[in-house]
Each structure stands twice: as structure tokens, then as C-alpha cells.
Amino acid sequence: MSTPKSPQAASRLFPRLGFALLIMIAIIGYLGYAMKTDRNRGDQAGSDEKSSERPGPEPLPVVNAIAYSPERAPRLSSRMRDWKGLIRVDVTPAKLESSLSIEKGCVVSRFTSTGDRVETIRDRSMSNASPKIENGGLFLDATDVRYGGDVASKSTLDTPLGRAESLLEITPREDGTIWVGEHCYRGSLRLLLVDGKIRMVNVVGLEDYIASVVDSEMPATFSQRGRQAQAIVARSYALYHLLTAPREAVSDVNDTTRHQRYLGYQYRGKDGRKFAGETKSGRAIADSTQGIICVHRGDVLLTYFSACCGGTNNRLPEMYRDFSSAYHRQKDPFCRDAPVYHWVETVSQERFLEELRRAEPKRNWGAVFQGIQRSGSGESGSFEVELTPGRRQSISAERLQRLFSLRSSFLDVEARDGAIIFKGEGHGHSVGLCQWGANLAGQQGKSAEEILDFYYDDIELMRLPEQGE
Image (cartoon, rainbow, N blue to C red; front, side, top):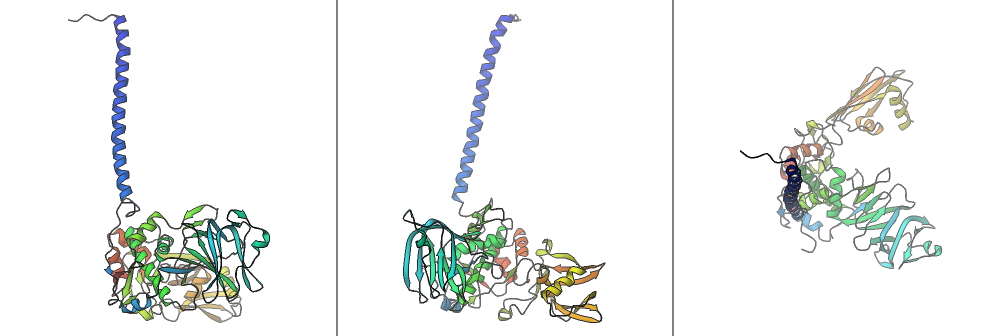
């Protein structure tokens, strides 16, 4: 039987035990930190090695495509002979004043209408530059121009850099970009006079263009496979317009939904904040599908696409009459969960008539609205507006869509309780790829190849050669 320790002995023991306990806690904490650090380093190394392959946690699927062959695509081959891998995009902003800024310096060159370089100004940086027309000539008036680090005089700023028959081309130095209005672009910028108006055209590599279009047209939250399909469709669409543009055309496409949305490398929001027009995810999607296009019967296919078909694809045969062998009307099972699959919009009868009178003042819209009913045939069709006294006016569904900013022209109209009720399906023209359908098909595990095979008939995916091959 042990003898109990005295209070003095206990008081000497407790500090020693406390000190030993602290040391043990410190050792355990250090070992835990070291193990965590090693795991993190391993994860980081893995992500660094695969950063070019994937924008998110899952690696991007491989898209299979046949190699470019003139024998397999003879019509495409004949058109591509002089192509340099660039595309010309009309990015003219609504407001030209103070619309140009280049931060890292640039080369400004003037060319004649025959393409001869007649003047070059090097190492030029500028901010808030304004292109303008004076006395039939093209001017570039800047408030902050530097030549070799020295600020130029006002008289130099007002010197005409071009004439009506010439163009200016601004090329940033190194990896610089150009701000045009609220958008920042890679590549170079051409300023031209076309029918007495200034046009601004971004000349950019096709793959840089596609990286931005993917993000501009389809959210990063959409499935990777759906975005891969979108990249291939966007590349095919752009290349078709590029190769079929008239010789006198100054651009191949514009930056709006008339062709494809193109936000550029960056853009400013309404609050002045900068946003990425080309994200790492968009760049990875473009890289994973680099050069791949849809070829139909030996030529690049004009690959139409829209936001949501509303459950029925390719409703407007007049749109794809020249490509009827690649499109056919079909039910789309993929987009039914899209928020714009079916939609309803309501306006008052007073506003309905006001808009009709404002848009078409030469037509007699009567004093009192009586009713509206569908008339004619066709997918979109038209409607008869009943007015007093005893008048009727016809208006197409496409016209109603434009006047009231509706999502599509596939709609029905009902008058009830003093309101006009539009009930519609889908968003856009519903021809070709359905973006919501592609997204949801990708979520279900469909590959980009399977998605494209569903939306286009008799196609094969072909990878274009890199420039110089």
C-alpha cells in the first residue's frame, strides 16, 4: 500500500505534467499539419498538371474527330486555300466617342483600299481615343497619346491618320488587348469607312474567338459535354460565314445574336466592374475541341442553334432550305426541364393597341379592341385582331415577338379580362442545336458527339489542321 504524497509534492508534480501535456499537443498538431500540407501539395500538383485539361473537378471528355482530309471534304478544301486562321468580327459600339484604349502600346498602320501600307506609327499607347470623320477623312483623336514615352502635342493629335478610301489597323504590342467601348478584345482592330460610317472590326484567331463565344453563348454552369458541343457548333457556324463572305465584305460575323454573342476577352458591367468574357473554363472547352467542325457531305455545315426549342426541333424549314438534308423536324426529349420550355407573358389591351399603333401608324387599328384569334397556317402563323367598328387587321407571330420582346414566335394569344396573354414555347428560332437540350443531355451522360448526332443529320466531326501544317 503506497503512502499518499504530501501537498507540497503534488504541487511540484502538476506543473511538470502540464508542461509535458503541452509538448505532446504541440507534437500532435505539427504532425497533423504536416500530413495535411502533404495532401494539399499533392492535390495542387495534380491540378497544376491537369489545368490545361479541365476547368472543374472532372476532366474534360475526349471528343473524337477524323483528321482533315481534302479527299473527304473537297468543297471545304477549295475554300480554305488562302485562310490564315483568323476571323473578322464587327464589334462597332453604339457610342464611338472615347471608345478606344490600348494600355501596353501598339502599332497603328494605315492602308490604302488596295491593301498597301502607307504609314506606320509605332510604340503608341492611348486612352479614350475617338475615331471620327472630318472632311471625308478618317481621324483618330486621342487625349493621351505617347510616342516613345513623350506626350505628343495637340496639333499631332488632330493629324488625319487616314482617308475615306483607306483603313487603320491597330495592333497591340506583345500580349496586349484593345478596349472598344465596354469590351476588351484580343487580336488587332481595324477602323474602316463603310458607306460613310465608321466600322470597327476585331481581327482575331478563330480559337480565341471560340473561347469567348462558348462563355458568351452558354453559361459555365452548363454541362461540360453540352459546352463542348456548343464550341464545335460555334466554330462550324463561324467558319461557314467566314468562307462564304463576299469578297467585298469587311467582316465575317458581328458580335450580336444575329450571328453569335461575342463578349471578347473582358467586358465592363453597367456598374463599371470588369467581368471575364473568356473564362478558364471557356478556354479549356475550346482547347478540348480545337479545330473540330461539323462536316456535311464534304463541306462545313451551317450549324444553326438556339436557346431552347420548346420540345420540337427544326420547326422552320424555310430557314434551312439549302441544308434540308442535315435538318429534320423532331421531338426533343432533353429540354423539357428548361425554364423557358413553356412560358407566359401578359400585357394590357391598352398597351397592346398602343404598341401596334406606334409600330405601324399607317394601318387603321380602330378605337376599341374586340378580340384576337389565330389565322393562316404554318408553325408560327398569324393572328387576326378584331377592332371596332367591324375592322380586322392581320399581324404575324414573328411581328408580335419583335414588338413585345417575346422569347419565340411559337405562341398562341388569348384576350381575357382586359389583358392580352401570350403563351409560348421555347426561346429563339428552334432550329439546330437546342442549348438547353444539349446541357441536359450532357448531364445525362451523352457525349458531345452523341449530342451533335441528335441535332444534325449525316454529319462527321473533322479536325482542321493547325496553321502551318
